[in-house]
Length: 92
Image 1: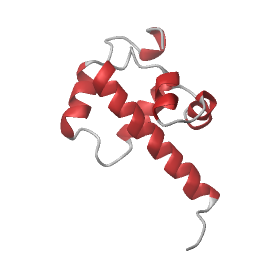
Image 2: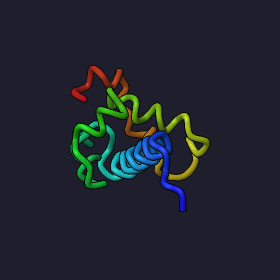
Image 3: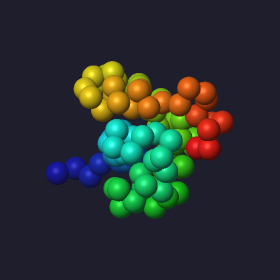
């Protein structure tokens, strides 16, 4: 079996982060979910989140860029709890 390239490893980490974020957003809400919560849920360091997603908004944008955006109750709940003003101004 061939070892994964660095790009493949980075993509896999990004996917894990986005999936963890979406699960936590659905359970706790976007505003109540911290980047530390996301990192802790997949047993990675807090810095890894910011390495791949410099802003919390980027986690949601990362999810939108995936083909499954808008499908399933997770996305509907995530959208429903999105703050009415810009996330960057709401204590993210």
